Image (cartoon, rainbow, N blue to C red; front, side):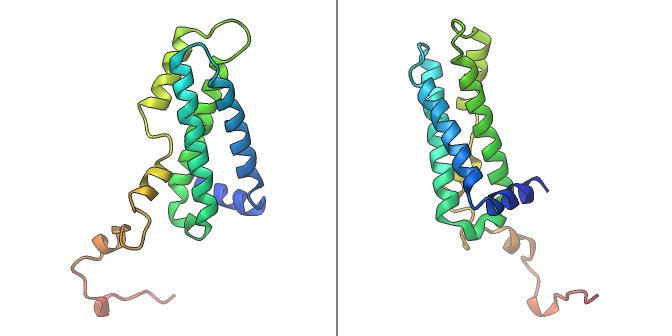
Amino acid sequence: MLSLDVLRALRKSNGECLSAFRSFVSSVATLGRSARDKRVRKSAEIVGACADRLTKLVVSDPEKLELRGRDLAFSLAQVYAGALLVEQCCTPKGSPSDGDVRTLWQWTVERDLAPFVTRAERGAYDADGNATAAFVYDGYDEENLRRDEA
């Protein structure tokens, strides 16, 4: 249901919520790129790049979003969480705690922030790449498959 809610919000807002997402993440990434700690700078770069690639992919191929809905919802959430962590590490009140920086580093470097993008680049959503249906129906004769008519 979460993925359908995300898709509904994208469609209902005509992409404005996606633009707001990208704008927020980009501004936080810009802030993070000027941080003292190189881990914060690197993490900010990763978060910003993921947001850019994510939004470009959504805009470039909106017809196939339902197939990708779950991955899209998780990717948006993970990138947004990464942006919030970058923002936490860039607070004007002194330098961030080592725990904050380590959490940011683990969040951005040790996971795939945007599986939506990664899987699309690997061809997982292409007609040939989406082998789930073929795998499930492997060995079945199409003529013997019946649909229940209710």
